[in-house]
Length: 83
Image (cartoon, rainbow, N blue to C red):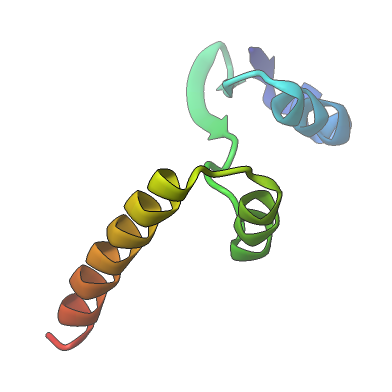
């Protein structure tokens, strides 16, 4: 999606709503030249992730695999934090 600064200033709510609805990015133009790109934030919050995991129906094997992956990631972050 491409918009001018003027349109962004006058209709920012609708433009942000479009981004949230699925547009990948918005390029903002000044005097016909692109000056800024606005993109959606990626990822989920910790609370959202916990809720999604609570609703997931993992098999026992998937639970074991997920726990091992999370434990391994935790080790990486613990060691990185000590530096």
